[in-house]
Image (cartoon, rainbow, N blue to C red; front, side, top):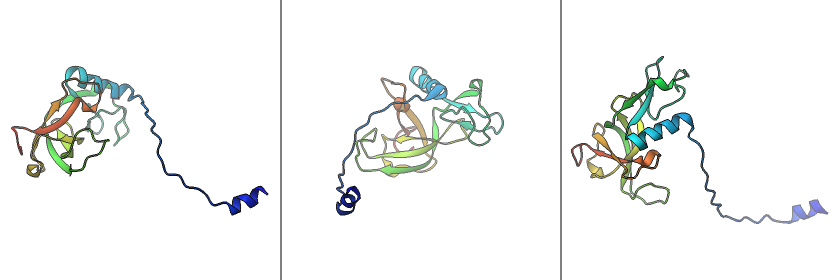
Length: 160
């Protein structure tokens, strides 16, 4: 009888969503990075002694050669950098940290060998181009997260 019911009954689809707030630890390395950013306004990176790559945000282990990176191999970098690549966002979404238009960008911070992904704002986005020099705009009330750097903007004003 039970199998008969399953064969004859059509499934009912219900589309919906569940709001599930959550939090997680960023670990020892991430915590130190965010504390330095929040308390001192410094952007820190980790330098791999074996392959010489300088990672921002810092890593506990080098993603290239898998060598452990000691905490004494941390260096301050930036805060300025050069725009490598970007994409402009023109639509609004509740998950975005700022109102459009803005750009998501890969920025080569001074002193790092690997790109740093962040926001570009406060400029005419049509004037952006790879090679533009950027500087960070720090939050007035830092909270210990990546948005303690609110965004990057061209050095010297509009269009770099």
